[in-house]
Length: 214
Ligand code: GDP
Image 1: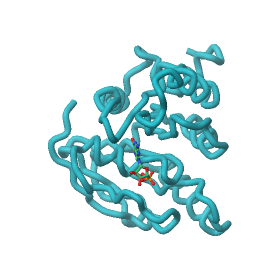
Image 2: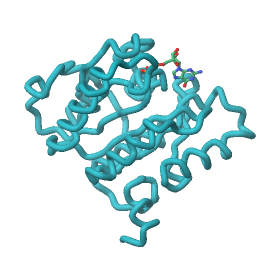
Image 3: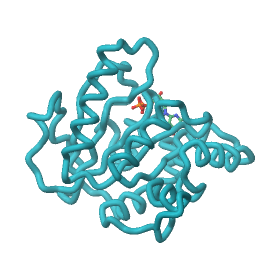
Image 4: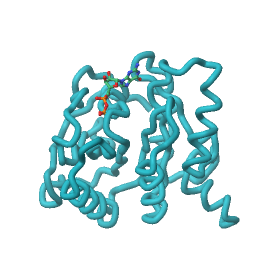
């Protein structure tokens, strides 16, 4: 898959503003500062489609990006920033709940974690959340260029274990070098096609497999 045109359709503060479109959707989530905006820009070949360095917690919006009129990428606010008020956490939870539970176009989640660190409780919670709603997900480990090659596989193992998915499910990625871009596009394509675990790339499938459910 290649991406030719990408356009922000709407930044939706609430359900009433979600676009009326039949395009399938892939949602991108990760903790604040994980590199989500940079990843969206790299993926779409644009410099500033998504705003890099956004003040954490300022944006309580779902951003819907139309990709080649083929599907939508949905960018949810970064979670897990310091000083999040209780009210903000509730708002975020409600917004995600609304979206995950009722958006029939939603085909998959791309969960972003930082390759340098173990997933946080919030990351693990997001993976569990996706499993609960039976939304297949791919994991992207960002900022690959900041981790020496010799340490990358150890970090990938750590991430896979924490999120209960196979190591093959974790796609190392760098917005700086564009490494991992092709693999991520492939994973998105597979999510859109609702493909079963041929690559065992998707957390949901490997999770069920681990439980012995096929
Ligand atoms: P967001 O809050 O998740 O949208 O994260 P941003 O895309 O705004 O990135 C947060 C910071 O990490 C910025 O300073 C980016 O320049 C930096 N960053 C993002 N991706 C990468 C990457 O792949 N490599 C490096 N070295 N820095 C990155």
